[in-house]
Amino acid sequence: MTTIIDGKAIAADVRAKIAQAVSTMQSQHNVQPALAVVLVGDDPASHVYVRNKGIATEKAGMKSIEHRLPVGAAEDDVVSLVRELNADDTVDGILVQLPLPEHISSSRVINEIDPDKDVDGLTEVNAGRLILGKEGLVPCTPQGSVIMAKTVRPNLSGLHAVVVGRSILVGKPLSMLLLAENCTVTMAHSRTADLPAVCREADILCAAVGIPRLVKGDWVKKGAIIIDVGINRIEEQGKTRLVGDVDFDAAKENASAITPVPGGVGPMTIACLLRNTVIAAARRRGLGAVDV
Ligand code: NAD
Image 1 (tube, rainbow, N blue to C red):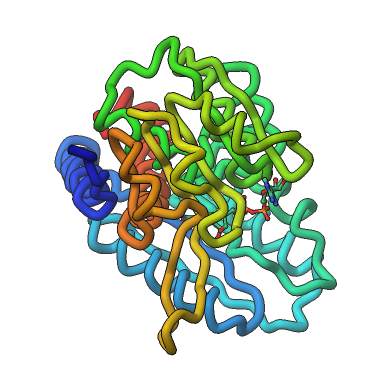
Image 2 (cartoon, rainbow, N blue to C red; image 1 turned 180 degrees about the horizontal axis):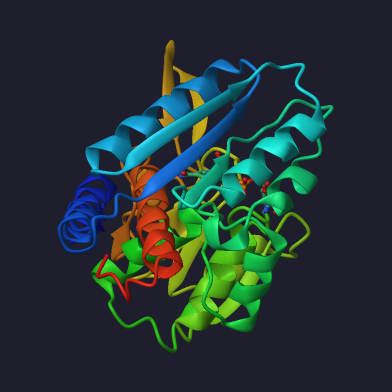
């Protein structure tokens, strides 16, 4: 029997723990963690994401702050806002919604964020901490992917993990997290020779590419755990569907466990954003470790 790893249920568990931790922070320390989101421009998808993040933040008992700047805002204005939020002691987490308009350097803006408030884990400082194995804030989607894998196999030590995709947002940090779990990690990408053969070696196969159903059923070793990060919108039989980077129906014949799309890694991303916000609040305010 193949386990379908239920991202919605796991995310609900994570959110419940977060709400509990927030409630304890409030009752014991009179602290309400706050997440500030900066949105520049009027990209409709970004507006939806920001609204959903705001709702989730408030549902967890935290304070949600939104700053909206017009599409023509100058890079320096965005940087000034980030600096204000860095200096504001009531703000625990700062997230700049990407993509930014083309005239603004995302790299400059992101790296202005105080690394201890960088709840997306995208600053160079947090990337460095992850590589060095130091305490930091870890990007949300890779974090969610590892939490999901550990629900079916709590100890990943010694397993061969293959991560397909080497982006800064997903592939690279996910590889680092799996290494920290003592996996033997292979990073595969668009120039990998014989990708199917590399995938067939994987005990844990993670796909973060952005190509619908790239990973075929016969690329999957018997008993492998599959984490499908891809979210691809396709037209099929006259309908728009969301599919992953893995051919789910074929791959699940060989896998011992697999994440579906939708309902897999997706719901974990916002849950891990909330998790990072609580962790950032506890660390910044010297409240000790939180159980989330
Ligand atoms: P990206 O475009 O930045 O990176 C894609 C990576 O795939 C690159 O490193 C590239 O080397 C590799 N690649 C491209 N073609 C390949 C091929 N033919 N064979 C092997 N590797 C190939 O994408 P990203 O930001 O890492 O996102 C990847 C996917 O994950 C997308 O579908 C995206 O929508 C999805 N995603 C989902 C979440 C979530 O919340 N679940 C979050 C972020 C990204």
